[in-house]
Image (cartoon, rainbow, N blue to C red; front, side, top):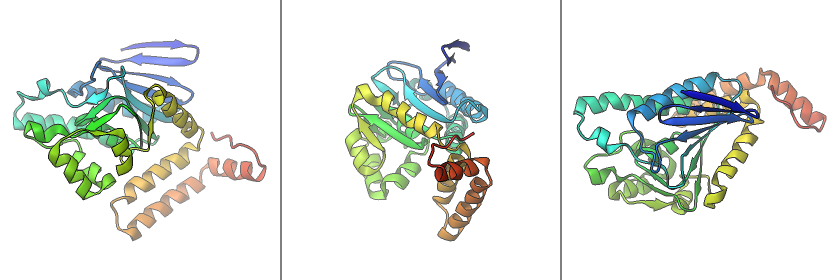
Length: 268
């Protein structure tokens, strides 16, 4: 691991990931160009990094993107997978599943800035983020059916919860790529932008989020995620508990005082 600091920007390079912290935002790069395939080391480092960023008070929002302009992550590293036994693949899959679950539980918002191809595990990685911005050149896909397998990182479950079962089955069964525009129409991504504006747009969103109350963001994420698959009464109980926690925060006093005084809130 190498760490450098220059003009307030902290840069850290791991074995297969690298990241930088500036303006309250951690920008994480999948760093195996040109296509950034996801291997087990990627997931180990991602899991470790989620723990680290959750504790880091300097970080209030996270961006995940791919190095280069050709791929976000063009799927799992098939060469690494192909000779594994069924037991070995299931054991290793616990690593990727744990990383995705840590992303969903992270107390800070995560934006996927999807550049180029996002296939298989790459699409599943984007699904584990809170928000997705992609470029006009982006191609998504779940090609696992063409390898004689199915998605194993949440693709069959998180995807259908976003786009609906019929649309999900069509895409999963055929295993064909689809555009960022179709992903937007399906409700899979939040925004499609020109390729040269992708990271700029993602950073603008992240900086805005970094300026919000960290407690309110944490409780908002928890309420939405935890309530998504609960019955309405249970979900409303979850929301009320999270509302109470946010109301007890000093940020609530500052936010309401700033509103009354007609000024911008300075959340701590």
